[in-house]
Amino acid sequence: MRANLNSDLNAPKLARQIGVSVPHLSRRFRLALRSSPMAVLTELRMEWARAVLAETDLTQKEIAGQVGYKTISAFGRAFLRSQGVTPGEMRRQWRRVTIPGGKLPKAEIR
Image (cartoon, rainbow, N blue to C red; front, top):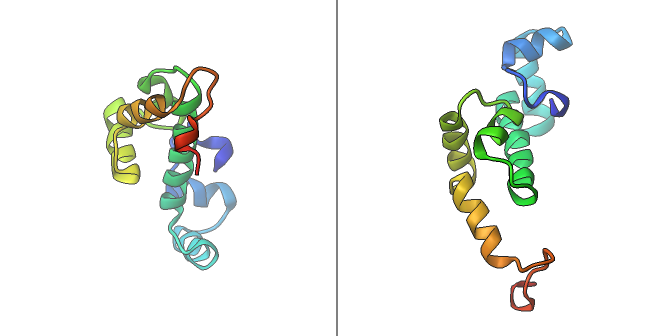
């Protein structure tokens, strides 16, 4: 899944790629990870998006494409649902707590 974050993955395609049925794939995911294949995919995409937002100046549209969303609005909705804030707000929050050189002020280190 990590290797294909930017592709249009869904449960049927994933099941077909590994040669199992969708119900079997879902059952195995639930047993191993206590989550659905699509929930795992979304979390992997959000993990990657958070890292790119924090470490680059790529636009949200560019990031959306990198993590497999066809539109910036779909990415924004998924990010908000998953993270509780928009991608832009998360980036602003990180920039407020960092100083030149990328280090947190001492008061922010826990």
